[in-house]
Amino acid sequence: MISEKDFILNNYTLSVENGSFQWSAPSNIALVKYWGKKDHQIPANPSISFTLNNCKTITKLTFEKKINDGKFSFDLLFEGQPKEDFKPKIQKFFERIFEYCPFLKDFHFTIDTQNTFPHSSGIASSASGMAALAINIMSLEKVLNPTISEDYFNQKASFLARLGSGSACRSIKGNIVVWGNHAEISGSSDLFGVEFPSSVHENFKNYQDTILLVDKGEKQVSSTVGHDLMFGHPFAEQRFSQAHHNLSAIKNVLENGDVEHFIKIVESEALTLHAMMMTSMPYFILMKPNTLEIINKIWKFRNNTQTSVCFTLDAGANVHVLYPESTKEKVLQFIKNELVGYCQNGQYICDEIGNGAVNCN
Image 1 (tube, rainbow, N blue to C red):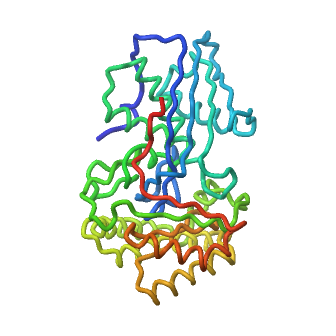
Image 2: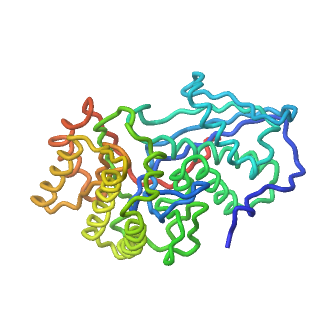
Image 3: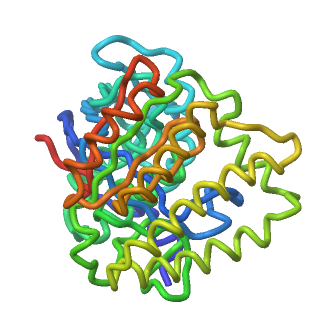
């Protein structure tokens, strides 16, 4: 069993004066949701997600050796411009991971990051952003300690990303990723994401995700606050149990290709996530009227045409429309005809399953 101690870098003999790396890391969309966490970003229940392909963060990490004065030193650029309000989050991330990456105070870093999706689009960039930064840091560790294996490299990148943003650990490697201990998923861990270990049915290969941007504003309740409200939540234990059950069910579905059952699990999970928000204390609603309009339109279209299309939601108002590649033309026409009017400025993003982080050097 791998523990946190296995990720502590104790001995590294090599040194490097300066250099740079560049990686892209995608966002991901959970099918079975993680909501509620323990200390050190440990999930209260396991989750499984599709890794996306087009919605990603591209981060260049440039480093220069400095005298170790006991402080972290870094500049942060977003799309080429200094971004001071992002810096506290990076500072906190460095503090969390320093025990595992003691070389961080030996360098001055310039972190230059950009997203392929519109900033403030309502798409969470913390997962892709933290994953991209974590894997860049692992590239530096690999220079200092070339003996580490590819598996260890990816595991530790996922482990570090989790300490920045929980769901970021699902954006490192694999097109379907499980995070959190689960009895039926071999190698699963609360510490990092693992690639879905079973064979995936053809029905779920290259699955499509069109993201409808219903509301691009700042969420009134942050995910961190939302997770904390699961402490003492009247339905928390039932929810955690349900997530384990649904992960078992979706594992079977992904193996046997039962799209109908997939739809039931995924939509139920999305609505359960928002039900937990509406029944916490204080309670809150992140869905907007247009979110509900879109859901009802999807149900009606599916019922009338027998097309395998469904929705999921993250902790916000936007709707992820999921469907097999074989129905792409039909579903996109439906989106253009009936759903675009509910999107802010008519904006939506076409995405599909991807494979994780990519080295851009």
